[in-house]
Length: 259
Ligand SMILES: [Zn+2]
Ligand SMILES: [Zn+2]
Image (cartoon, rainbow, N blue to C red; front, side, top):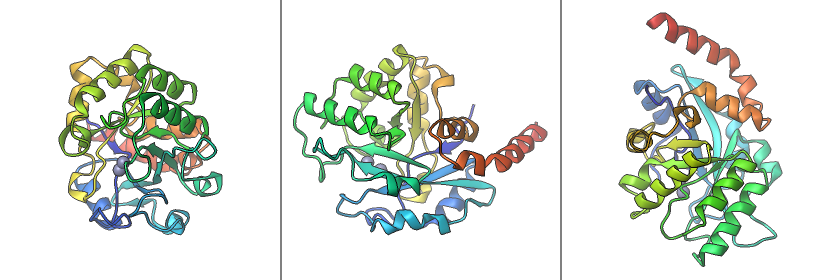
């Protein structure tokens, strides 16, 4: 079984990333992905694009070279209990989905209790659909509490491929504990590349291998294909699922005739 989507990638709009939308579309098509997403950093990160960047993503094509692109954002979880994320309803109404993550320049690590509380509060806003790289060793959390809250709020737990190979070093044991707890609680994950350059779009092989190692239920890998992911976004009332339904049917019937 091939993993056919990618829910986390940065473009040149975040200045620590290096590829354009066109480069991502081409690479995703070359790799046989059905769908990828551009998720640049929310406004509180030092290298974030202006908020207009997100609202204007509607000018980008949905489809190129047979591949669909989702319009996403990687929002920042904030320390303030009055404002849990650096996005609001207006901004999110333009987006197909949001990831919510801790980033050191925005949220100084404090304590397990505070990290857990902030993550849960962010999910309870209903503004995000994926919890980004929760295995970061700089932000210890009460894993079981976070995953129960994710399940209560229908938020996917991200298993971020770069956490195993290049970013947030030391994440692996935490990611494995998280994966095992998600399995125990029969909850759902999103596997993603967190690409900062188009060459790695769709590369989730290490994360995918880890799910196999622990016998993780494949039905709970929501990013496995575009249909699962779009059906999940429909549960959140995101119109993109309807918008791409004709495309999805044609992609799937093309797959069937191939075999
Ligand atoms: Zn991040
Ligand atoms: Zn990222």
